[in-house]
Image (spheres, rainbow, N blue to C red):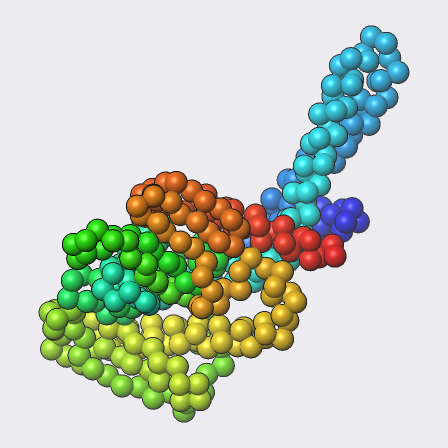
Length: 353
């Protein structure tokens, strides 16, 4: 590890020198690439430099242990430096883990009401609101591609794009079955009902990222409409794409023009096909798959939202929080941080094993 870190430090110094040279700025594309590489390496190099500095402090403190006048101070510094070195070494191991190539991508989120009828549809709407508020809090942009509402204001299904740096790195663990336990507004007896909603989170792909043969796609156009026939669009601007080899169907009707809807639908289709290919590859790596925090499969129950007790439980990491209202208002960081940490720990264990 030390040799690898030393080489990365030298490479980082080379990057700094190149970015400090005036001739570099004659090529804007080169500047952008060097800046990106520097940004990505910076957390690792800063941690490594702190590690080297604390190593030097430890050595100096050790030398002073034999000095009667400095012994007490040296012992304290020696102990503190030793603790810092252990913590920084762990941080370096995590920073050296292979990064997910999709971490910086936007995401496509698909939410579908499952078991529970209207109550499931109402909770699907609550989850859409939760993710929208989380995105808003991080300065990300949310764009709905397709929405199928119910008469009572619930959502049968919705697809939306979240645009923002690192969206995939934060939201990739949200795929799976979300279970809700609460008393429906329509329930006169006050009994708690259990319903489910399925969430799928995909990294947003462009057509160039996934090979799609145009001859394999059937495009249908239709008029967009809201719940119960409201907001009827008089032109056929909504688009449905059918990928014949896989039977995958994508609809987009939120944009005003057919061209915009087709463009967005193609990105969603590319993301769906990418996900299907990833699942095929992951099935062949079942041991590695098991070492991760949840498989991200749509049929895996990942979380329970218990409204009578104000309790949220993430079953994958055994995390229980009693602040459900805050979570439903988009305060997801504590859960996501827990999932990221658990995933890193599993990958470290897998790598060391």
